[in-house]
Image 1 (tube, one colour):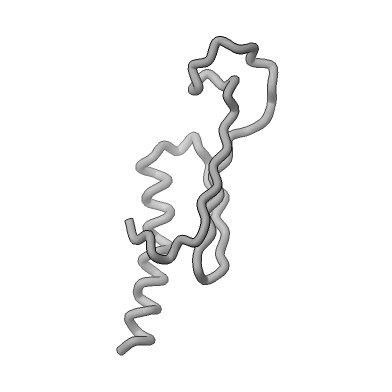
Image 2 (tube, rainbow, N blue to C red):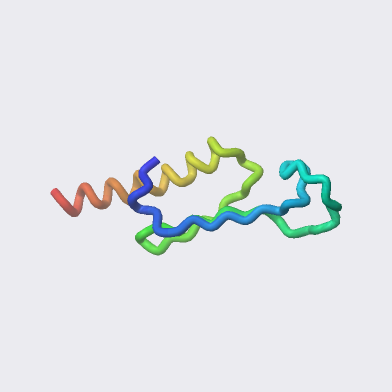
Length: 75
C-alpha cells in the first residue's frame, strides 16, 4: 500500500455489532465506517463489510493514480 498520499484515516465501529463479539446489548443502529483522506483532497468513505482485501484494493487504486501523477510531474 502506498501510504505517503494518505493524510488521515478515521475508523469507527459499532461495538454492539456481531463482528465486535461483545456481550453488550445489540440495539444500536450506528453503522461501521472507514474514512480515508488523501493529499489531493479526495475523501473515500469505505464500506466495512467488504473486508480488509477490498479496503486495501480501493485505497491502492487511488494511491496508484496519485503515484502516476507524481511521477509525471517529476519527470
